[in-house]
Amino acid sequence: MEISVIIPVYNEEDNIQMLHERLYQVMQQMGISFELIFINDGSRDRSIELVRALAAKHDYVKYVDFSRNFGHQIAVTAGLDKANGQAIVIIDADLQDPPELIEEMYKKMKEGYEVVYAKRKSRVGESWLKLWTAKTFYRILSKITSISIPVDTGDFRIVDRKIVDVLREMPEKNKYLRGQISWIGFNQTYVEYERQQRNAGETGYTYRKMLRFALDGITAFSDFPLKIVTYFGFIVSAFAFLVMLYALYSRFILQDYQPGWTSLMICILFIGGIQMIAIGIIGEYLSRMNNNIRNRPLYIVKDTNL
Ligand code: UDP
Ligand code: MG
Image 1 (cartoon, rainbow, N blue to C red):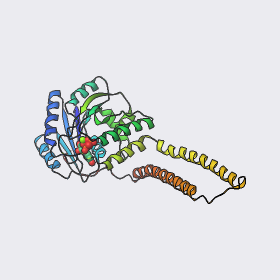
Image 2 (cartoon, rainbow, N blue to C red; image 1 turned 90 degrees about the vertical axis):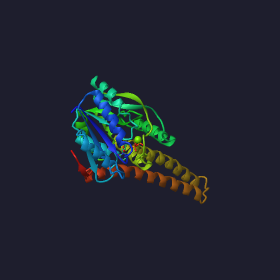
Image 3 (tube, rainbow, N blue to C red; image 1 turned 180 degrees about the horizontal axis):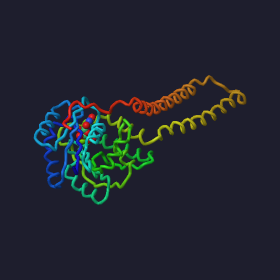
Image 4 (cartoon, helix red, strand yellow; image 1 turned 60 degrees about the horizontal axis):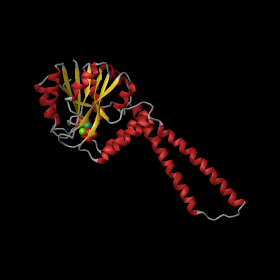
């Protein structure tokens, strides 16, 4: 098997047909042996019926049907667990990632790269808020992490078997695959493309899921938020020390002391706020550690033809 294509699917009934056709075209043109692995991540529409129908007709179509929605990164992880190919493609089901680009990515790989990711030159048809939050997030993340995670890239990429073997050995439960792949190293490069609008249906990434995903990325690759807490602690303590000196000075030297309710209130609220944020940040790391210690299975398979 030369190429395995991993396709996470969450409510994509209107895209599966066209996605399959375009992928098949590309694979035919490339003249390689391939498999398409659809991971149904608890879709509430007819996605899985459509996939099963494809699988009945074509033996290169494989599927894994989850017992519920486990999230995009976990769906891709399940695909990585099942993939047999020497090269593995990760692609969205909504045709925002053009299947035709796979040929160029595969060629590039053959020049001696283990990872070829697709870098967005532009993104059409997405809300300014999504564009802005994504852009800002990737830039902050790249500043606070020690490894360089490429900006403006999603999971659309082709990776060598070697990379997948390492990924499968990485035990973390909160997956941030694009970061993990950067961390693994080897030779990585990219091709550029214009990201299209979603073909049909609507995004499965709510802002809530995006926030969780962003926190997974940060906590997996950076201790900076924890360090901020420490720095802030020092700054606030230094400031508090000066205020203390002044308080003593005004009490004993100036003999001028008022019942300073306002300043007291501000100090308490300010320090209280900082403390809450600090505990929250520690909690984010702790809950992820807890998640790893619980060691539950990442996903539960209801049905599969693999
Ligand atoms: N997806 C998934 N589980 C989810 C959300 C999304 O498997 O909980 C899939 C979805 O079907 C698509 C890919 O992940 O193939 C990217 O999701 P989407 O297009 O909704 O995200 P966006 O492109 O808006 O960031
Ligand atoms: Mg999409």
